[in-house]
Amino acid sequence: MINTLTLKNFAAFEDLSIDFSPKINVIIGENSCGKTQLLKAAYALNFTQSKIGVGEVVTKPQINALLADKLMGLFKPDTDKVGGVCYKQAEEKAVTSIMIAYGNDELFGCDISSKLASSAKVSGNHKLAADSGVFIPTKEVLSLLPAIASQQVNDSHLKALFDDTIFDLCHRLLVQPENDVEKQLNEDPRLGSLLPDLAKAINGQYEINGTNQSFVSGQYTEVSRKTSKSIHARIYSDGTTQKFTPSKIGSLSTSMTAEGYRKIGVLQRLLENGELSLKGDSPLFWDEPESNMNPKLMKALVTCLLELSRNGKQIMLASHDYVLLKWLDLLVDEGKGDHIRYHSLYRDESGGKVQVNTTSNYLEIYPNAIDDTFEFLINSELDRSFGNIGK
Image (cartoon, rainbow, N blue to C red):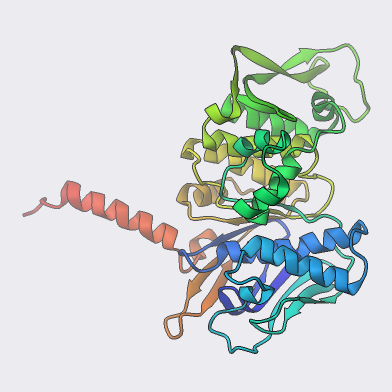
């Protein structure tokens, strides 16, 4: 669980510290305020921690090299040095640092000595996060999976074409579930509520098995059974269990489905194969969930995010979307332990430096370019409709 992220002379930030809720965090702000950069910085540190945790890197030089490589892969600076991620307005030799404080108040981060630096120097406790968390980028990725699974596009080509958020997510989506999905669903009440609701939202589910990938139209239905298969099973009235039932429409190739559906499909897959774990406290980073998604799907998405949060998942979203924000505001239920913290990034008028205002009250978000824009649109429409009254 990430408590605080501190950025100094890094990317868009001269000096910024942001305190996260252990539940849901929503980062808003106009373009170029660094919303995506903030998420990527936290993800880079968590990713490095996860590799240390499983023993892939051990020595300080290995850890330094891994983190520098990850920052390069995520940010793709216009130089071949990790110093390219430094704040452009900083002095040539100003030290750049990014630091995470975790829930146990332990710290982990790194320093980059200058804009010319080719390495990062890690500091703090190296064994804090066992899981990197999942980063879902703005770009839809399900359509890339068949070419990757068939090795028509290898890892080096994928990394050349896209940043590491795409690379990492594609490989996590291709992980096969260890157990039968329907068995998991009926033995874990958390999945038993999430997967059927997601399938209902898009009238089906995505099925991924190597190069065989498709969207199957259908719904989860209740099927009677005589006895429970597990003492932990989700048992419905009259001893029923949930089973996905395809419709007569059949299946479609992934690429023939809407991009908004595919984004829901990413959630389905990550829940089915356990890469979006409901057991740890690793974060879910999601950059603009609303991208290419019909607003009609937003309520189902927010309901899913709230359920994930209630089951211990820390969530960090970057968004420009009014509908997403309003559904979060309308559906939050403090009686169920919900908590949303809004972080509004903005540039100050004096020097144009990125600052942040944080609140847990939707009505107190300031500045709020999203609300301001919708208010302006509504007022413009009213002026057009009623502007001649009284003249």
